[in-house]
Image (tube, rainbow, N blue to C red; front, side):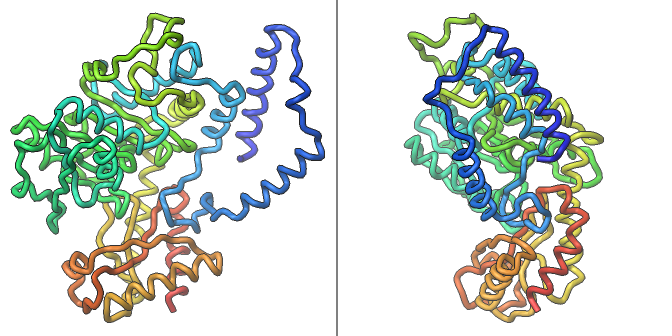
Length: 447
């Protein structure tokens, strides 16, 4: 945590301590006490063990989708956790519940929904997508849920959990859905992913909308990774039509703990039509009595949820507005710019070749001085391991079918069923300035 966050958190915790003592004198029960010596020893060992993590905070780490929370978001979360509110019912955390409703209104407006919507935070994008697919099943019982071959495995898995038949749609070379192979009479909901977790691809929402509306099919957008890039919809850096069409979807999922600067876990699900709340109807003999207002647990599959997640997101959106020219816009501009910068360097290189041009801040690439797919896979794994061993760079690996790889790069001989390439996720704005250095470190690792 940086010094500024420590200062603000310290002052705020002092204020909360004064509030806590205003209810009367009390002291912690001795059974909860731990000696200073023991606590110091445990925390010393803990610090050593946590140092075994990869350096997620540093721009040398460009591997998986792991983005450190903003220090001020972490501080707000820690501040709320000193109280530990539960956002299931209003009596579990009145202020944090109100903050959740406020951030949900902000996110609904950001994605183009009106004032009448239904939504809440969740523990993760997985749970958020489960909830969206559950509503899809309740809305169109006995109908299939369709998703592309590039969709996150969550959708196939949750269809199994929900005992709904899933239908995987083939993707053409240009990224379009092969809708001619789909019987629309069988489909109740179609999932469109805006920011695949593999290579950050933005699926063709503009193609899906007229087809889905013609056949009365619901649209669910899985924007768990890419959703916040909508802030760049009117910028010169993005030409994706999907960002301007998100309000046409029936439900949207986004993960604030990815590009929203939040600690884990903080997912979010939104429904355009608030009448889907009828599927949540339930009763509790002890929970919903403190207020006639809507309790968040009445519109959620989850029960207890950390109110601290809502507090941290509320504080973040107060400091970083969802605008192109301030707040999130400049941050995501640098993330997307970093991927484009790495792509340009690869285009000029004799050592590295990009798999395809990036749509978001994820880039796939591979050692180019190989003749076969087996050699590409072998060399990619060697580079991946060398970076971690030497602690000079941290990447990830990505497996593609050799058939798909060969369509883009026919100059390489196919001698395997799949090919493994390198992959970088440029989630930190610091990556933009660090990319040239990272690129040269990778090239040195190939040599």
